[in-house]
Amino acid sequence: MPAPKKTGRRSLLVTSATLLSLSATAPAALAAPSPPASPTATPPAGMSTVGGVRLGQPGTQVDLAPGVPVLPKDLTARSWIVTDAESGEVLAAHNAHWRLPPASTLKMLFADTLLPRFPKEERHKVAPADLAGMGDGSSVVGIKEGHTYSVHDLWLGVFLRSGNDAVHVLSAMNQGVAQTVKDMQDHADELQARDTHVVSPDGYDEPGQLSSAYDLTLFARSGLQKKDFRDYCSTVSAKFESGEIRNTNRLLSGDSDVPVYQGIAGVKNGNTTNAGATFTGVAERGGRVLLVTVMHPEKPEHNEVYKETAKLFDWGFQAAGKVSPVGELVPPKSALPSPGPSASGGKAGKEGSGTRTVAGATASSGSGVGTAAAITGGALVLLAGAAFLVNRRWPLPDLMRRRSRP
Image 1 (tube, rainbow, N blue to C red):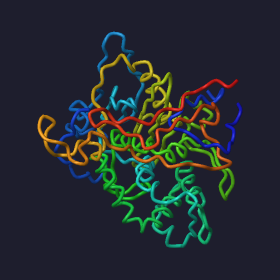
Image 2 (image 1 turned 60 degrees about the vertical axis):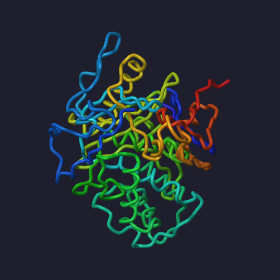
Image 3 (image 1 turned 135 degrees about the vertical axis):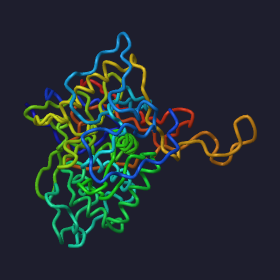
Image 4 (image 1 turned 90 degrees about the vertical axis):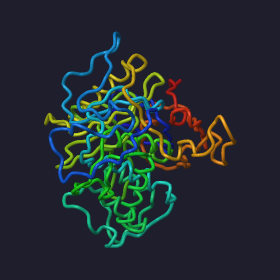
């Protein structure tokens, strides 16, 4: 099977990346409970109801009306969720708010928090202190003390190799791990991701470090508003100091028992002892974009998290437009209407015009990097400074639609 090509053009909004033959319910007012000392094998009887009451109920939540396909029967994940990335509708979920160790899927929150802070051309010489405190057995991309790296290369290390070393260097540039953890928690709170408690920026197993399938989907959806995030999470392979690195997201890069998923465009995978395998993916088919998050499949088969994700994507694309939603992805706090005079009375304040700006999409450039977009081609359509009405759901920017090559 042909390997994905490399290209100097790196562009992705959310792409229908067929890689050749590699075949708004209001959130609950109550704060989330304190994280338990360790996860259990049974979901709690009561969970957060952010996004809808049904999402706080244990077990599978789906409305199987006539014409709606049945869910796959062999799903073993402790938690999963299928959502429409643009409308925010939750098509189906299983223990969506179960607070579980997130592993490296937490790096989506890390990236969404720090990506806008450093120009990709900025260079940083790595000091020994930058790499201090990494957990034993951490995944690394091969950052070396005394060497100088561009911010662009550090982000490639984060997204493609899930490099905790790259995370720690970027955290050092952000005034340290403690400050970065605080910034990530603040950003999670802004996104209304109330199941998430950040302890380390890289997702390494730490007591009390928890998130949920619902929150991880919020992080992915927020990150995908940023062009650089879309570019990095869709990159299949790239040149690095240590040689070529390849994305460990098997639905994007493929494996012996997992073909590249038709329409896949990212996002992030993870695997630790406590978390098991975790994954959030985004894919587009027929003009519809879905997000699927799967946490901790119990079945020990190789690449099981990707296999269950692919089954849920298949179901979602078949069910979309037919199934009634069981909840929704809430918008960030900054997208909510500002408090002030009611619509029936006085004027809105300076922030009360009914619009908010979607998280900024920065320009992206690079060389020698293979992306999912490069395989299929297409036209880049970017809504720079896109705005949306607060009485509508939070959209992704316009998509890059697949166009046949001449």
